[in-house]
Amino acid sequence: MSQKEVGLKHLIKTEYLRSIIVPILVIEIFLLAAYFLSNFYVTDKTKGMLVEEAKKSVSQITQKSTDLLNKEFEHIAALTQMLTDSHTTFFKEYDPQGTDVTNSNYYMTPDGVIVNKQDTPQRCGLFYSNISQAQQGRMRKAIASEVIDPYYNMVLKANKNIAQVYFNSHDSMNRLCPFMEDALGQYPHDINIPVYNFYYLADAIHNPKKEVVWTDAYLDPAGQGWMISAIAPVYKGEFLEGVVGVDVTIEQLI
Figure 1 (cartoon, rainbow, N blue to C red):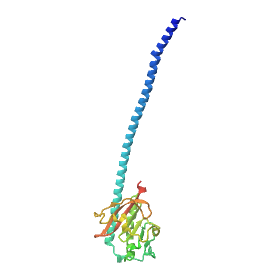
Figure 2: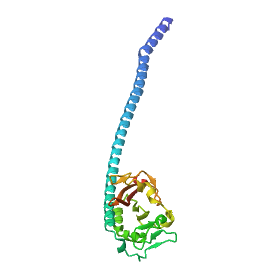
Figure 3: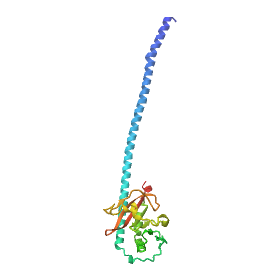
Figure 4: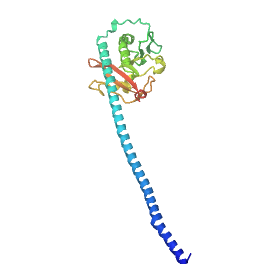
């Protein structure tokens, strides 16, 4: 083969590579770049859509949860008002002289605390602090208030989220349902109940409208943990006899 033929063959081969292979490589590089760019674009758009959908879902769930909690609070507030009405009626009709003090379920400890025993499943607990032991008629009042126990049990059964129901008097008598076995060990014997937020937030200064109010979260002295309470005052005329309360634990709300 002559040198001229070799040069011609080489020239043809070079031109072939330039006209065929190079465009193919350029096209391949372009396709790869287009693939990665489109993939990035689609991924970014999909991610954005998913984030927006998640935000929308969270907002809907939050609103639904808020509505459910509001309805729950409204129901508990209504039960609290019913309990308030029953206590108002009790004190309006209460006659200390008409109370039998021979009830063997109630007794006074040597340091002046009045408590009761649970001889029926429906009986609520009673703890009467010795801070008011100089006051007359404490035993009569403790025994007479047992007539309200059915209302406590009715409220407990009406809403499964309620942890306990109680009445606290101005002189630190606490009637509580369900019954607390170790009241003497749980409460300070000289507890002054009106200094606690689940009492004073319902008094005339903090609650002049005399309506149901909610406390902030607090640590329950009866040992139920952190909770909030719906509370309402019980008046006899203009005198504050005490405060009813319906407790919901933070754990139960969550």
